Amino acid sequence: MGPLAPIIDSVLEELGRGVKEKRSFLQTAWPKILGPSLGARSRPSLRDDGTLCVWVDDSTLAYELSQRYQGTLLKRVEAAFGEGVVKRIVFRVGSIR
Image 1 (cartoon, one colour):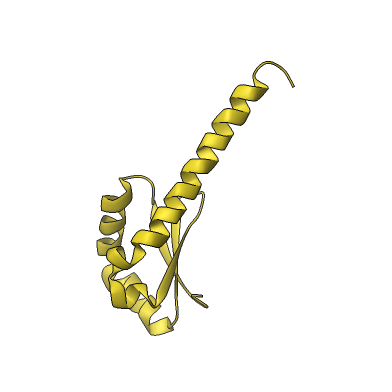
Image 2 (cartoon, rainbow, N blue to C red):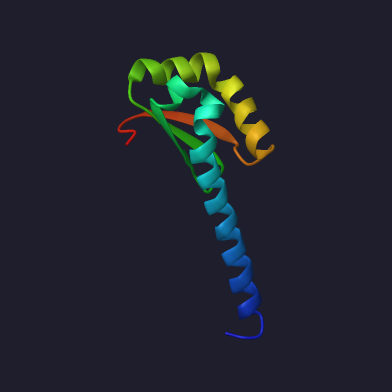
């Protein structure tokens, strides 16, 4: 593969580790970011493209979060992660377990 192969492998491994750490941190911090009662009714999933997909157990909750609290939630996520990590938030109804 050439002399750059070990360097490229190392960089890719480090990038993958960073994403895994962010996802793990998100799972741990989620009840504090959204609040304990809503945190228990939702599950976050961070995609590689910077989209935070929030799975919720009820369509009314998904609507309420997307219409009334999306901006506030994005600010809280940015405070926890830093700006630019999460570019947008989408809400989906489904299983949270």
